Amino acid sequence: MQSVLSSKTALFGLILLGIVVVSALLAPLLAPHDPREQNLEKRLQPPAWMQGGSPEHPLGTDHLGRDILSRIIYGARVSLLVAVISVAVSGTIGTLLGLAAGYWGGRFDAVVTMLADVQLAFPFILLALAVMSVLGTGLRNVILVLGVTGWVVYTRLIRAEVLALREKEYIEAVRALGQKDHKIIWRHILPNVLPSVIVMASLRIANMIIAESSLTFMGLGVEPHIPTWGNMLADGREYITNAWWLATFPGLAIMLTVLAINLLGDWLRDRLDPRLQNSL
Image 1 (cartoon, rainbow, N blue to C red):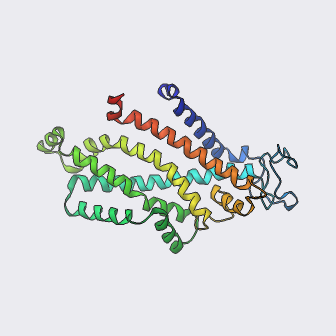
Image 2 (cartoon, rainbow, N blue to C red):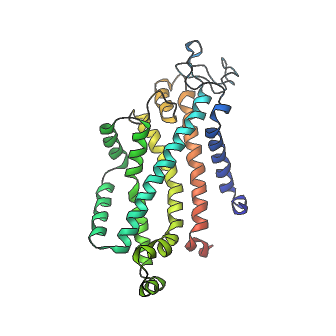
Image 3 (cartoon, helix red, strand yellow):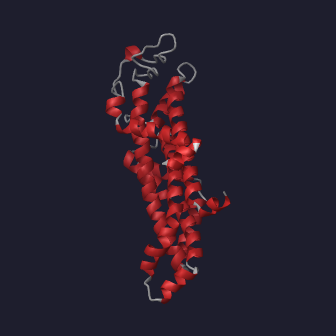
């Protein structure tokens, strides 16, 4: 914690992310209104500081009279849930495949590398769109798609590190002593690649937030009745000229959350990467 406090950018990111996480966890207590409550008499009400605004709705209302602030607070829940679970799934799959492919090599390594190259040949958003169009919309399907399609970056990173680690003298020594392969992987190789996994996962969380919002914005993500930042952007695009707050505030929420995660991810990389530490 002391090292975080010594870095202004990391501290700024920590504060921003802390606000988002606390808002998501305490949404029922912090949100001034039900995010799904509609009131057509108050539709397209501007923010409180503008003419026609009301303190009852600090950030205004949308085209159905729903409170923007409440929907942003509840939307943080969905974005963080999708990002964390999908990163956990993709990170686990990618790390296991990278460990196996890098350590044993051979045909398995060739197959994994080929699958990774094939997937990388397709733009991520197009691949996600194709899969979502088949599976259909829904929170579970979004998590499944983002989790399954995100394994490649972990596999390529871990495989490269394992290829170098397996030739180290201490690995040769424990192998000569009769240590079984699976114990060598879990006891000696995995702890050395784990910092890279942590850094990659922290940065990928930001990417997953953007990916979920993009899919939802295009109508292939979370269902429209669930308050998410992507749904708010999709609703606001039709009113961007006369009700700018509909799209601006959820867009700012996405931007600040991604910025906070990236700042903390950069700090983690500086702290956990021994090559960067030696150069400082």
